[in-house]
Image (cartoon, rainbow, N blue to C red; front, top):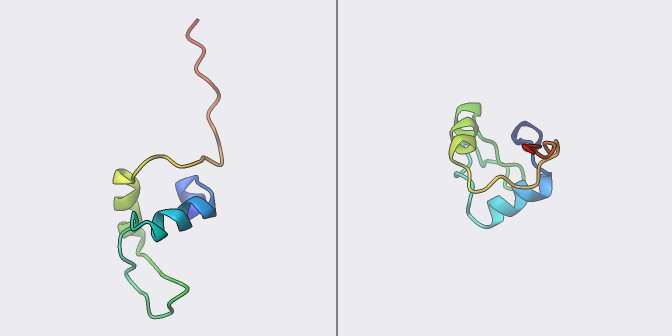
Length: 63
C-alpha cells in the first residue's frame, strides 16, 4: 500500500496509529489489516497530507 501511495511504510503505519486511515475491510488477522483497492483509492483521493514521498519531485524552476 505504501508503494502505491508513494510514501514510506512508516508513514502509512503512523497514519493508521493516528486513526487517519479508513477501517480495514478485513481485520480477521489483527496484525495484517486488509483494504479493498477501491477503499484505498478513495482514501488516497482524500488522504490527510502527502507524507514523505519515495519519489520526490524535482523543484519547480520558474525563474
